[in-house]
Image 1 (tube, rainbow, N blue to C red):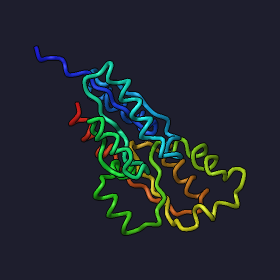
Image 2: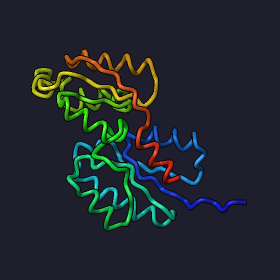
Image 3: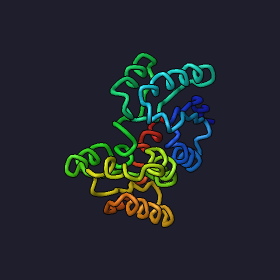
Length: 198
């Protein structure tokens, strides 16, 4: 009988929770546990490194291995500094758009057309709360041009084939006055990272 795999903790951004849990269930990785930090930390990225450090310290009491499921996410390298000090590996890439699409491909596409605004499944589901209310557009619609005037296209990087989410993404593009592009990405490098960690 093969030995039990080491108990593994995945410290994830809340925006990835559903996808991570789906992959764990799909692959039967019963040795993996997930703990999430609130997705709203992206509004204050300087707070992400210390929040991750606290989760690592707590996780070391109960788990043999720890991985962090964040990109740099606007921390300007501070998250990587913490992870180097703690000896913990993270999902590579600057943010979830990149690792869902594939970092090299995303950066190439973003360089070719920097006027794209991106949504993932999570952001489509929470568009009203995170984008409209989060940016105050429900109270100050006149700010729409200030925030989105330099964008031309809303790109929906879809993790799953879901006609309902695609309709909502199209409606989001219309609401922001942007053209629409649908790019199925699946779980991208999140999937390959978790398989390697598994």
